[in-house]
Length: 396
Ligand SMILES: [Zn+2]
Ligand SMILES: [Zn+2]
Image (cartoon, rainbow, N blue to C red; front, side, top):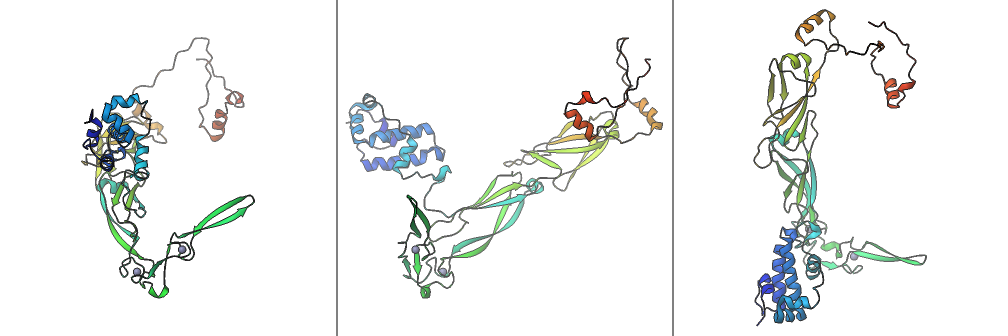
């Protein structure tokens, strides 16, 4: 008869469970509840704590007799990290490198391949073929390297594939680890005559495979497409994955910001002031015709939005927006003969600011800023720049 069953309930075992049962139950629960697997860290901690207590015969008897309260009388539980206990129990953790992937059988390296995709293709989606070279198990010897029984453990390295040489370096002895020459680091030797003729004893063959890569509408740079088990095959490990990493090529006109597109468009001054139209070639086979109504004045640097013309979202292909920054292109020169037309059309010139009577009005020349002057300005040397002749103008 036990005082309370909370810890047993957490592990879903009866109070008379054996040590092996407890371990099995904890392992099953912990694998499911592990935070790396998306489990609640608090629940994982509780379950781990329960197992910590019940797996210790002394603590278990205290718990059985007096419950949780009895344990705290024993002076704390020791703050062991549940992750540490988990790793300690199950040999370095089931979750390789925090990737959240179950370690399971050893896997060959994932093949990572970067694919540079134009914004047009990310907008429309595209299926592209990718030729891939990877190792496959030799079809002739089925990955044995030779006839049945022809493969022996390398006698030089004892099958480890490495050799260790000691070298005296002054007072220190240096250990150098290198591949075993006898077996080329494989740990096995095959008699020349028994060697598989197809793979030459290597057990694997180089093979080309065409992968169909479906680039979905709205994919972004950095997203990946995974082909499970398409990496190198090996007689001693599961094949890893082929991982395609999408890289977004920079576009000459558009900038992408999440699902929005940003473009700068030059419009002429007349269109900006008096209306007109311009077109934006889209990422598909369309061009957007934009009208500026007469009477609506566009200022240089204005940003407008065209709703629903951005990139499609990944999930439901809902489009983002297109932001258009308008750059107004001014003419280089004006014919003085037509200025009176402008004077009719535009608001009058701003009158000159009024100054107190004793102010000396000095007329100056507005010159283009050349490199030299700009340099001086940045050097805060404007005060020294008195070389230009001053023109005193009659006070009007
Ligand atoms: Zn060897
Ligand atoms: Zn072979």
